[in-house]
Amino acid sequence: MMMNPMMKSSEPGTPQTALIIEDEKDMRELLRSTLAGQFHVLTAGTGEEAVRIARRERPAVILMDLVMPEKDGYSACQLLRSAGETADIPLIVVSGMNDEVNRIRAFQDGADDFIAKPFTRAELLARVDAKVNRVARLKALQKTLCFGELTLDLQKFQVASGGQSIPVSVLEFKLLKFFVENSDRVLTRQEILTSVWRDAVVTDRTVDTHIASLRRLVPLLETYLTTVYGAGYMLKL
Image (cartoon, rainbow, N blue to C red; front, side):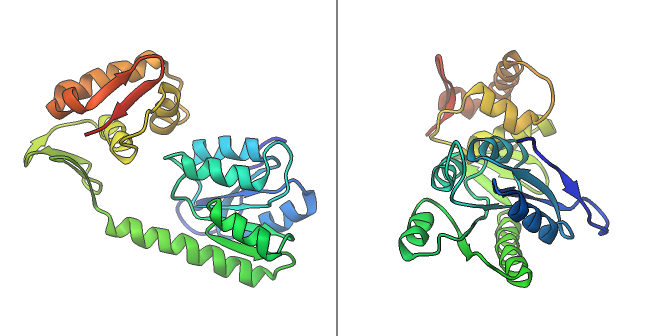
């Protein structure tokens, strides 16, 4: 099933993105129409497709069914929670499988909330807003990232090491931020390309070139940013 972007917001500026994972056409349309007034809505009909879209687009919230072809909702939850770029996205299960066993399993696999079918539009919007607003408040509080003596100012796009400012470009800042946010994990070149360059058409060589540049700019990386041959890169103290 193809991704189906819809945008019907009359608010100024760019609306946040919501991803709906639902293989049943009528329910998918109900969810889409409910959210379309506040969000730029993307839809997916399978768990496999949804994981690809979520990693690429990083939506503000994900709503998903449990019963889907390819990957079920439980597997999709686990994959989304295990990937650094989607681990913190609010994940709301919308399902008719409302027994205690399925609800508990959904929460154990990473769901933040569970909405039972049938539901009212008002309840769904209220729960979505609560989750999105909570994440927004937490992000507003987090103004810096730290790794050892390295500090990243997320508002000013500035980097300092041991109190000394290090001049970096916006792209270099985003690349360094991605490594710090995913420290202690091997990152493949494809993950780095997808997360930092998004839709730009670049090659693996581009990643290597920018990482070499970062290592020259930030001496700490010479020690702690290692190449994992055949896999990618890992930042680890």
